Amino acid sequence: MADSTPAAVLGTLAAGALIKHLSAAYIAKKDFVRVGRISELYVWPVKSCGGLNVQAGQCEKTGLFHGGVGDRTWVIVSPEGGYVTQRQEPKMALIKVSLHGNTLSVDAPGMPTLQLPTKPQTDKSQVHNVKIKVDTTEYLDCGEKAAAWINKYLGRQGLKVGFSAPNLHKRDAITAQKLWEHNAKSGDLLSFSDYSSYMLMTAQSMNVLNSKLDKPVYILNFRPNFVVDECEAFDEENWSEVKIGNVRFRNIDDCTRCLLTTVDPYTGEKSKEEEPLKTLRTFRCRSRYGPKPVMGICLAPDSLGDVKLGDEVYVKYK
Image (cartoon, rainbow, N blue to C red):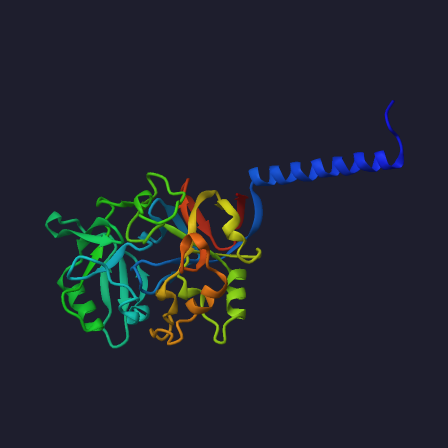
């Protein structure tokens, strides 16, 4: 005979509630749930230089595009065949870009405007190799005028400006040599980005960081493509997939941070105190990444399409 005592009834109700809770949690992990909206969109056409704050963009395999200009499509090449960034030349932060039809205008303090065509003709005799991290990929030499401009501005010799033309070799994120596992797949293509074609941060994570700093820093210190608002701080690390509009992304890794974050995007000067990196190391390090703190997540697209400011952001949890 069934036990109908109050204790038994309460036990049955508690068990039912637990099963319902666990089922809901399981379903939530499998389904997309809304976490916020896109509050800022950025395209960074020239690696390690100023970006475009845009209203909308097109998500392609190699990164976010706007007006036919893609993320990290140009690169400054060293005489040795490597690449140059704000780590070596913090003044690069003051190089600003703007889009005018089929021309990318490049400006810097004390310099005339450099005009770069966004659809240059590919002359195979001007295609060379550049090493990005551990991988080698191709670039189209943008010519003597562009080289003279960047050498004069940085006070260097032998630098070149390179362009990742659509028909040139693209790197694959799966070949990134890291000391930890990541979720990149074959076909996650890159132009001149370090490890992923997209990077996402949240406004709430920035707020927490700035609450710990004597001098707040800017989102531009971190150079994201997507900024999400209205979600929990650092919740992005728990997401396995992200959907913005109709575009789906895969979280392939946390974004580890380096000295580039210490360059003020408005002065082109490095922080003498190595902030915000120093503070990030006090609460954003993970054992798998060693001394590199994390801020934001690296994404790869599993579908392509358009995104815009105000788009709602849905995610699946790990």
